[in-house]
Each structure stands twice: as C-alpha cells, then as structure tokens.
Length: 231
Length: 236
Image (tube, rainbow over all chains, first blue to last red; front, side, top):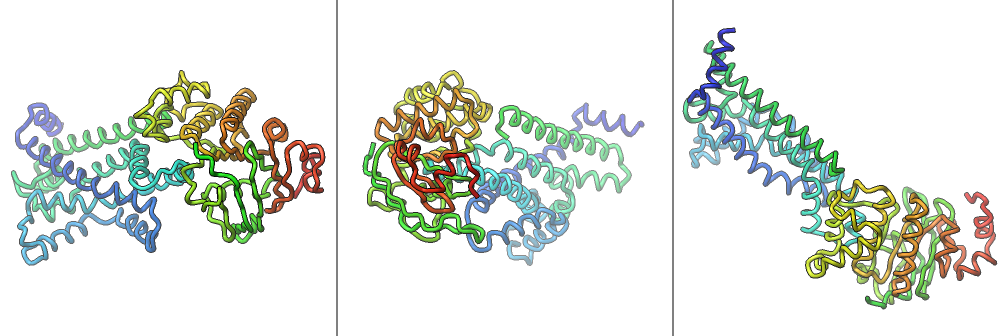
C-alpha cells in the first residue's frame, strides 16, 4: 500500500525522472505514429481501390505482419542499424530515432491493414456512384479519406496504443539508456527487475491512464460518428 | 445541354454472369426524346441493361453508341439514380457540392435551388445519411440533375418511396424530360409507367421482347409475354 501511495506521490508532484521518461515515450510514439500514418493511409487506400496482380498477396502479407512479434521487429531493426548492418553508418542504434524506426515498422502494418479494410468497404459502397459522377483518381482518394475520417481515426489510435505500450522492440534497439532512450515500458521492466516497485507502479499507472484515454477517445469518436451516420 | 445523345444504339449485347446469360443479344434503338420505361419481370435483365448503358458493366459482347459516339465518350453527359441511394458521409449541401464542385464555387445559389426543388432546402446542413429513405432518394435525384445531364438513367429509383415522394420525383423527371434530357428508367410499377412513359421497352429473359409507344403497349401489346405481364401473371 505504501508503494502505491509513493507511486501516486511521484505522479502528483510531477517527479522529474518520471516525466522525462513519460515525455520521451510520448514523443517517440507520436513521431512514429505520424510517419506511419503518412505511409499507411495511402498504402491502405491504394490496396483497397486499385487492382493489380499480387494485390491479394500484399493484403495477406499486411494482415500477417499485424501480428509480428515486437522482439522480431526489434531484432530486424537492430541488424539493420548495427555497426556492421547496411544502415550502420547512420549511427542510430541506441537512440530515440532507432526506437521510432522500430515502432514505425511495428505499427505501419496495423494501421495499413485496418485502413485498407475501412477504405475497401467504403469503396464497395461508393464505387458505382463515383463512376456515375465521374469521380476518379486523386479526387476519389481524398473523398474516401475524408468520408472514412472517423473510422480511420480509430485505426490511428489503435496504432498509437500499440506503439506506446510496446516494449520488446524498443528495448533491443534503444538499449533502455537512462536519460536517453528509457521509455515507460522499458523503465517498468527495469525497475521491476531491480525491485524498485514505486517508480514501476507510477509509470504503470500513467501507462494505464494513457491506454484508458486512447480507448475513451476511440469510443467517443465511434459514438459521435454513429450519431451522425458518419460511421 | 448537349443534345447529341440520340439515337442510342444497342447492338447484339451479351452479358454472362456466374455462368448465367443475363443479356442474350439485346438489339435496341432509342431514337425519340422523352421518357423510355424499361419493364419486365424480375431477373429479366432490365437493371443490367441500364448498367451496361451507363458503362458500369462491360458487356461480354456487343456495342453501345450514343449519338453515333462510343459510350466512353459520353460519360460526362449521363447521370444515374440507383435503387439504393448512396450518399457521402457529409451534409446534404456538401453532397451536392461534391457532385458539382465548379458550380458550388461559381453559383452556390444553384445548389440551394436544387435542394428547394426536391423539398430539402431546410435540411441543407443536416448529415445526409440521417434523411429518410425517400429524402435520400430525392437528394440523389437533385445530385444527378445538377450537371444537367443529356441522359438520365433511373434504376427503380422510386421503389421504396412513399406516394408523395414518388409524385415529386415523377414531376421532376417529367420537367427534366421537357427540358430536353432523355430519360430511361427501369420500373416494375405499371401505374408509374403509364404516368411517365412515352415509350416502353419490354425485356424478358435477357432479350427485348417488345418496343412500342406507351399507349400502344398498354392497349395492344404484341407479345404473349408482355400481355401476360400486364395481366399480372407470374413470368418465370
């Protein structure tokens, strides 16, 4: 009980160490999310509305990659960025940039696959009408993205949820270095193993609150869209 | 409004779907302006014929020309209203603006006028998909008419509407036809065909069984299938 009280004290008193870790976690995940969204939405849309040989295989691959184990992603990015790897010259290993890359690799298939499904359903509904109105190409793509905005928001939030809660990949490529690459999840793992449950619990509480916030946002967006028949 | 959409030539049109012959060699020439109603029993191929005419379905064989031009060259002169209205997840007014972006910029009042013509002026800022089925279909018609098409296709557009909405739709279609738009509509409703049609095309088993002026079709139809249809007999 004392540990729990101490954990809340750290949060309420805006403990510097705690908030440094929290800020880095949010910064890394948000940057990863922005990069992933820029890749995922066009990719998901392209796969949804364009027919080409191998399209089904690409969708199958995306869906399979959704369940990719984070430690495998971490290992792949590690091999890419390690000194002897093809991108080793960039010197990114054990930096927040490496963690961002790992998270992008991890969440891009998730957002892409979910966006693909959303846009594909919309495309099936709108296809004939768009043809009839002569709406094609870029105008159609923009219309799909605008009309699917609420459903896509939930896809994006799902990606953020996955990124912020991820531990396996970022610990491999980030190294969990204090004041440099230590994020909430890696700090929780470390502090628990050290027996410092106070900080671990504080971080766990914040992570849980963030997770609840993201889910509350998802539900709110769905409800708002449902009420206006925009879902 | 371009007037070069007539005559409409449909030549030896074949369409096979799932191993079944849906259209089995349709030959049809529509030369007269006004309203042509395509009638026939369920599964006769009426909607498929309309979809081929609009370019939504590529036939397996055959050719369609509009005003002696290829179908693909006349796409922007056509508009279609489907049986199930499909509206964007936006407001009523935004749905119209999307259909005619240039018009929305240059003459925004025209959009409001179009809404008023289908009795939806007071719903302009509401989400379009919250309208009733009949209102959604009226909005679909207003959207289709916005660009003043030379050819208007309606696929059982009033099938699930209340009588007041049907009458409003019919009056709009008649008015549009009077302005020179060629209208081709698919309908099961004999009453509607009698009210609207200048010409009837009766389709049965994927072929045109009869094509005649509306008065003649309803008073002295020439084929046993059409007679049976008009008598209310079930055609399989």
